Length: 419
Ligand code: LLP
Image 1: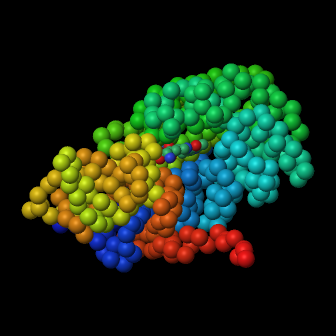
Image 2 (image 1 turned 135 degrees about the vertical axis):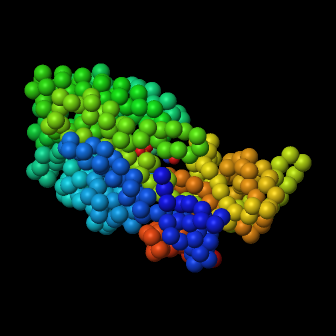
Image 3 (image 1 turned 180 degrees about the horizontal axis):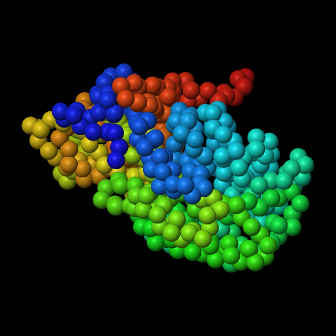
């Protein structure tokens, strides 16, 4: 459920007409609904009830500092994968003590910064990383809190590019290896083992892979107990899918109930989750203007002003995302359009084969664009990054200005004049 609805055939973001936001801020435009973000985070938080837990919002899904601030105000934790994300969380007022740091390539500088601000723990992805964290912590005379990211070798049944829990993926420590690495970690002077982590993939639409993973981790947890290694938390990562089209992913409450059932005997074990998409995807839309309509023998094209540089998901994952009219004109003729952008690539489309009733100059909204939209955008074809607006009730705040064209080459330099 989100707060983008039609009222009298005009699309609204909470209590503001999208056409009004377009008038004020132009296009392409990302619009987020604060109430939706809050509702989605709370759905996870409430679902875990009184069992000790922390819902760490996956920053990569939408890292705008106003989104992070919204999360921080709810008491959220954060899942980060770079120092850039760490600094964003701090700039947004997030609590360092609620940050978990994932990612396969943490540098010594990133580790040092994370230790100095006192993050909750590192989700360690290899033995080599464990050694590096131990070394950095030694120079700071600290013990670094770590949780090992276990790769459970479970098929998440999702797009291969966003599946991460199979043994052929680069992520985590193989489940068969993990016990050995835990024992090794226990012997490292500057390491404090606090938990176990995993993340098997994104846009999962079934519970079973999560539950199979939980079974494998619980088994390992019991083995570790026998080795005298006690864990404080179990982190099951993110990955819960959303409805883009006809998917019917489990509700966070269903997921939580199934997890709590599995962890009945573990009241003391804190559950950490790292949802990104399930919180931010349906809290955002990408609004774009129809510049031209064009037809050839086989197809009708709606050529719009947002491209794969603004939203790469359809091009990269053949992702289907719903596209709707900002103002519905019920008398107008409907046609089947490929909605394509301005970029010089055939993969530059927002959607194909879409039934729309539009004319040039109209506006379209791509739904579910709040996750992995702005965060994956680029300036390809020298197109400036798009503006972002956060709506709350009748208030709209510009949370990212449209970048001026000169910013495109701001960090570049001409070669010295040669004679
Ligand atoms: N935790 C870790 C360690 C992750 O790698 C990810 C996402 C998450 C949590 C959050 O997963 P979520 O709840 O959002 O599924 N760009 C792709 C998705 C890539 C996800 C990468 N990792 C897309 O647009 O579909």
